[in-house]
Amino acid sequence: MTPLEREIRSMIETDGPIPVDRYMELCLAHPRHGYYVTRDPFGARGDFVTAPEVSQMFGELIGAWAAVVWQQMGALERVHLIELGPGRGTLMADALRAVKALPKFHAAVSVHLVEVSPVLREMQEKALANAGVPVAWHQGIEEIPDGPTIAIANEFVDALPISQFIKDRDGWHVRMVGLVDDKLAFVAAPDPMLGLVGETGTTPVGTILERRYDRPISLLSRRIARQGGAALIVDYGHAESGFGDTLQAVREHKFAGLLEHPGEADLTAQVDFAAVADWAQRQGATTHGPLSQGEFLRRLGIEARAARLKANATEQQAADIDAALARLTAPDQMGELFKVLAIADPKLGPLSGFDT
Image (cartoon, rainbow, N blue to C red; front, side, top):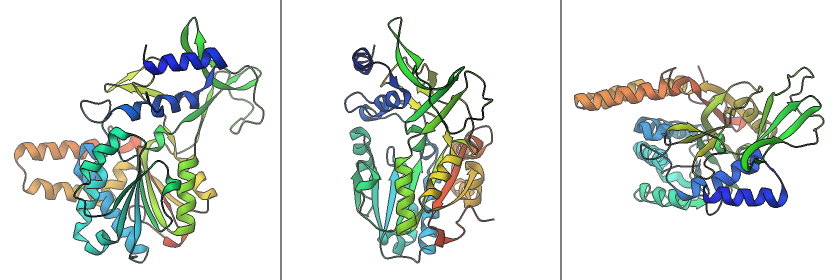
């Protein structure tokens, strides 16, 4: 039994079952036992690998994209470059290295990282120690000073807590985590909900509907709509809204039971990109996409970048570059499962990677 499971059991024994979104929030961000608070989850020794860790090409192309957006914004003297959930700092370090070729943009940038993990923050400080730009850390996006913004959220939205609802014969119920036979188990709240968005009247019993906590992306979208700029949302998920249970746990690069290792496994759920676009549009921003990650990176020139890297590479290095390119863009790897959505100030017009 993990330390966090003991605390969750105590909560349930005292106050009754907790909603799925609360369980997910505790598992990921509990101040003492939360998954992201206590460890480095990335890489071969962690539980999963993200695109920036696959290849430097990913961060370099994101940096180039940000520079083009800055030019569209009028090449401002000051711009906030924000990353939500910046991992080890790899993406930002690669992006800043790439844009050193554009000294005016590099000089205009101040970096703002939204990070709750002290372990990862320490790694980010090391990764960006020689970045040559001001870097600040924040617990939430609302702490970042006002100003024009270019933002990146790579594999951030999938870890925002989701609420789940389950259809029974008498209607929809909130799905919760309780104790059954002295074990953590999914249960349904006793009283049905009325007027749940997404109900068609013919939805089969047992169907699950997910709704995600939208505040961080809504705040970012409002900021962009009012103060100018754009953001990239890169994550795994689906382009259209629908029903289904997408919550999953990953531990040591393998799927794990959702209730088996609270605080010691990563919990995520697929991103509903239609819902994310709706959040942004409600705040007055416009959206572009989503595109598959593979298509987006090809439009940004990843194949040409790979060819340049291979020109001076050893045979083994060239093979590694080809493998990374496939991992990022192939339909049977990250290329189709991951998607890219842009949120932008309506005044910007077409964005790089999304225009044809």
